[in-house]
Length: 62
Picture 1 (cartoon, helix red, strand yellow):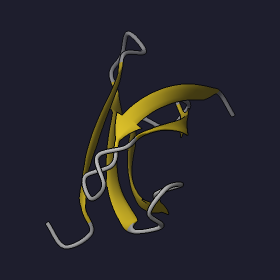
Picture 2 (cartoon, rainbow, N blue to C red; picture 1 turned 180 degrees about the vertical axis):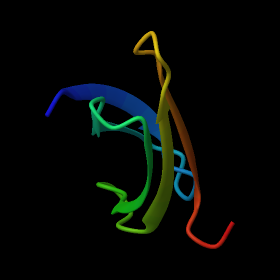
Picture 3 (tube, rainbow, N blue to C red; picture 1 turned 30 degrees about the vertical axis):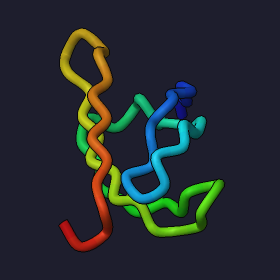
């Protein structure tokens, strides 16, 4: 498992938080709670063939 640390802004409280992304999986969608406000953040992660990671975050119900 290749883990890469990323900084994202919580879509609820706006705080910047550090998250670990598994770069060995090309497409992922999961929910992880904000480390600051504890609300559920929806993560949509893609890794392209060159290994470039794209992380999109949204409210749980978006």
